[in-house]
Length: 245
Image (cartoon, rainbow, N blue to C red; front, side, top):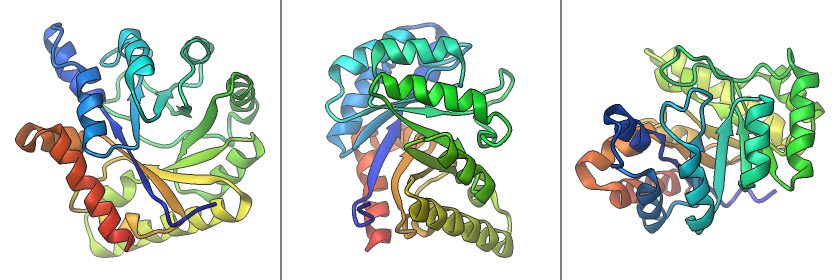
């Protein structure tokens, strides 16, 4: 596993959120994906939610045809979503927990609790030549469960670290990320990270060398309002690379 290389996936969901708020054809997340790649994005991440609150099948279909890097499809572990993934063949599927009333994903997938169901989804997707990552909290039991269901990777939920209100809590949460990342590396799981990361807090997580990919959306789209998508991606990628050095 090459821990010297680190990649950045850009989640363009919130461009679609802005579009859906008014029911218009703009701004187009497909155009945002093009600009993100120009800024150095290594992957485009989109979450096709069951309620279709932002990304639509149309977006997935066009991005699958136009994205020059990789497409990572975040989705709930349901038969409907698995069939959609099998049809469109993204490069990666990230299984995430999903609740209709939440503003954004609130925590990691409970793989240990739903091991048999998740294992079935993982097998189905991998049979379609799709790699599977599981979005989990930095919990050793969840990581071991992810390994047992034969996932290719896990994406560590960094929300608790990002939301920490004090230095002791922040250090504790970073230590959990470090332990989780090292465990993944030891048992042969690729380890990614995302949720709540921005230019002010990404450095200490990016310095964890076992983490080889970051998926970041909201803070980049927010920054893009002021500096443009391409520049916002460049700034985040540079912050990650600087921390890595």
